[in-house]
Length: 536
Image (cartoon, rainbow, N blue to C red; front, side):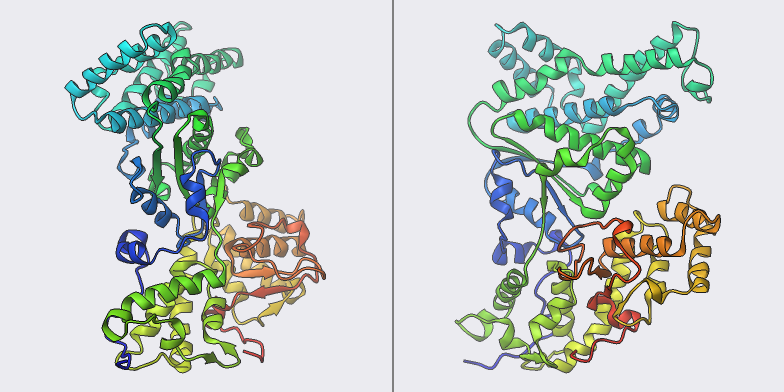
């Protein structure tokens, strides 16, 4: 066998699934999630995982599986009309619950996308042919006929882009609300809040109008038509929704629309042979829940829909082995090429793969990036040495801190300030490590460029007002660092250290006691100047 030599640009993959198509096709490792997703009878429909955990890869594998599907690209949907609607903004400001209206939008969008894709509706002629066929098929069912007439009202807009249909639905909704207000001599969206000029009684009438407008029998019947008359050939059909984090609209509206999308997915579960699959980042789902929890959203009702992505070290090793084999096999050997043929077996007292894996949050992207860096620094060598792995750790550690800041900045205001507070500590510490002056200086930053919607900022205000103890504030801070994954917690003497990426995703601050041991994750040791334990 010719000796392996690491060549320039040798890589085992790319950071994003979109750029990683070659390796996804040749070296995909299924940790058991793919079969669950492909099975329409299983409830798991919402892929929940951190950045780089493989959510988009699962979506891509379903696309490549030969099954019928339609991808709903949220980044291509312009919601500017909805976002700029003065009536929608006014109703939201006055506390009118528009959840049902948002669900109406999703129900219509998804239903139409299914009908378009299933029947190849690409123009007005194919749209007309589809409706004629559907009308004949359902001619004995008056309820279905009314629903078809409702959908057909969109006429030439039916087969146009999704944003056109959203605009049409929103316009019709606005007209209904305007009519309700005009009866009382009022005008919505004229610069003032509706609630500033109408009584609570009339506001209730507006709310009732929202409900009556949305809960039309035609719309409730639409899902039945999809089930019985559109997807009635017995073939499985998938609606795939990814890149929800790129859904660039007003933040508050974004969270409500995502929450309504989750509600809509649950309603479509009654359709046989259909599965709507949504991929969403863990941090974004957490933000949706926290921002909409007062609107009747109960997360436990949706747990069965969640497919939380977890990886075990042995699965990540299999992923790395397959990719290394793909890179080096054809050129150097007919046998399998594995990690330990390319990397030195030990880093200090640890197996080299264990050393690398411990410096990740068990996500494929992290281990791919670390190994790519090691290969880059080992050009023309036969092996990646222990020294190279350690040298690359500093670069890798700093890059991961930047990525964590970007990943969590929309959830936690000034997340980098939390990181600054634990830099230079021992890898193990507890609440007693933080002195009053240190806590005060840290907290003062949150009163500058104040974010009144940030929960931790509210805690800081209570702290300076004497309504919250220093220990409680630090416990809150540690619970946030735990959620981000930078800190692990040993909550009692009988259990091992818990990490959010491998255990419970959040910990209530009340569970963190004065002497609760906290551990800084090895991934950030080099970036945070943390002294590792002696065994390292």
